[in-house]
Image (cartoon, rainbow, N blue to C red; front, top):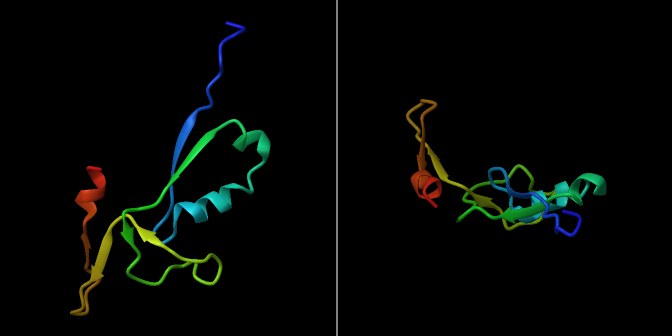
Amino acid sequence: MENEIRRKPRILCLHSFRTSGRILQKMISRWPESLSGELDLVFADAPFPAEGKSDVEGIYDPPYFEWFQSDKVQYNTPLVIFTNFDFVVFI
């Protein structure tokens, strides 16, 4: 057991809505090395370019991505229609 190579736990890091894997990587780079150095962090971008304003504009540079898309239905209701969500779930 002494000669075994110890593999770091691999963690898939998924960014939030209308950001990117690169942005999440920058945020996590602030973690202490004692934590981040023990993990194999993998950063992915969502499959769709952002179609609207990102909450991080002016803080982080584009490009921004979305895991799914949404359209707010007018008609004075809070109804939102999400599209391409099934595509992401089955990737």
